[in-house]
Image (cartoon, rainbow, N blue to C red):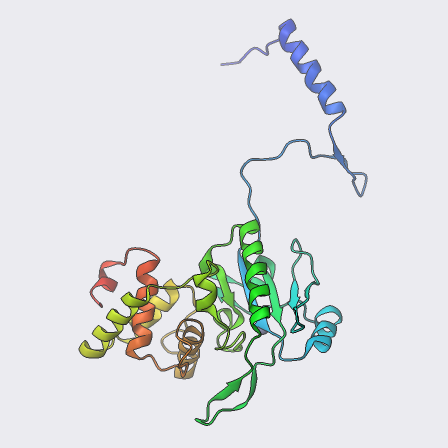
Length: 287
Ligand SMILES: [Zn+2]
């Protein structure tokens, strides 16, 4: 069936009006002789930025600024250790910075193009503690306040989910340890920045795992993947899985991050999974 085009005088008037409107529509300045009409904006759209990745610099402010602005790597922001801290924006948020490298989170890979990177001036590991574990440089409270305000602002503007505010070690656990076990994820989450878990649930589940036995590593693998981690295959070297567990512990149970899948770690993981949605039947049977 053909439809007749409505050549009524009224419709013609409407068409003429539309043409007149287009005549004065804003045109974006075009390169290559392009004129692009930007007068109409689609309602359905969103930010391309889905993740915020936190790092420490290892080097001090001046050196970090030089590396990140003139070197082969970069970040959108650098938070110095001045008092008060200075926040540099080195790369516009609409562009990619080279801060994440080979990385994966929640099935997304190579996060440079989909994330905002924030470097915090901090030396990271600074020696060895009495018990033989690395000693870490603490973050300044003023730095943490600056980072919290910055992350909150970015997350609000881009609509970034709390679970997608991550550390470099979360998205590259086999290569990276930053922002390290002293980064106060828990404190930030209590202020509404990032993801945390119900600690009483974690404690109860941990106690149950301690008395009734730990779930197997296949379970650990499945749950770690559910909360976002890229989990090595079953036939990968054991230290790969240990690195992922250590990264998880640095973020969610930083008191001990030896990569040993203990009852407390299992409890925290189960509590996180429970908080992020109803468990499948196979998972429910494990706790
Ligand atoms: Zn990093």
